[in-house]
Image (cartoon, rainbow, N blue to C red; front, side, top):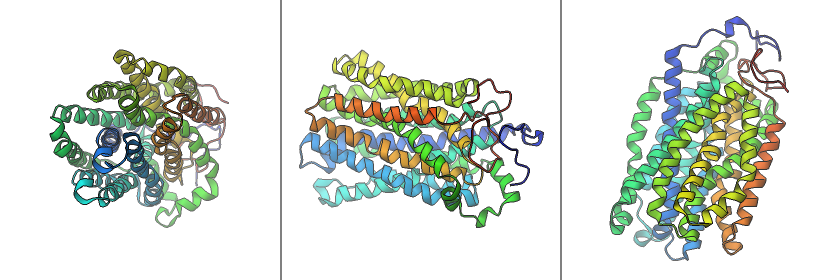
Length: 462
């Protein structure tokens, strides 16, 4: 690529021109609403898996086995995410980030709406869970490039010095999606049990169509990434093979992202999905108590995502991530005894802090950190593959594995805490070995190395 500065060199003034404020606002809004829809879809599905799907789609097995079966269907969506990531990242590198972000909206929203239309097991038998798994697969396939695409577009659009806080809007949107999902469940749980199990849960899934339309209108007006537009001037992007570029030059970066995100994804979905079933099945908490706590936790998580992104602008991506991951290595051994007290106040505090740190805090930093780790020619593909493969071994199996450990070890929380802590330790070590990238020049064609943090930034270099 022409005129690309070497690692550690000053970035040319031509690359430091102020970003168009209107484009930045549109990109931030588009990233927020897209991930809001994605997480809304996933949260309402995860909550339904814990509260109603076992009874509706797997009624002929024990409650714990039904929980495992429901979480298995939930995991299918994560298995589909890398496939969707592979598919959409290819087009995102060739035709632009904007094209993918509009297309995936309709796939996710359509699949979610279809879940609300499914007949249950008592109506069509075994075909009911088969259709549920199919819709869940399509939901995950569409989500496979969503967060990575939003993060890449925002990182490539944001001005220097504000990339962390603006890219974090992707996770602010994810948290707000959880707010809407929890609010939807709070409302339908006011219904009588019969109404909830017949049509109430369906209304939650049907409501996703409103979010889909609103997100599509906003995304249709956003501009393409300026880095991608600049890349098109020097590279024939429509004839390049981005996945081959990743395989040739970005394998190390993809593996790094997988390991950095493994523990984070594991703990995020343990708090957001497994804890619901654990509190209802093992602790015996009234299920009507859970959605309001999720609602409060999601609001706090949205604030946390922005704050951690802003802190990474000030103190660096690597340092901020290490502090948060270090906390999460230890906390599982404090969380479960706290939940076991049955105190609603303590349970609420634990879930809120879990959402703030594990679910959105670290990922708020990752939204700028991961795009900065990759070279310009395969950034979208690299971020997508790294995040989505880690989501399979992390968030995709976390609720299922945690439920299985619970059944295997007679309701003991210790194996689950060990699992959560060890995966986070891997992420901590992988982050410690990664370079600092704060405000790295994103026109560089190769992956980040030590010394490419913005010259004059307030963070130390490795």
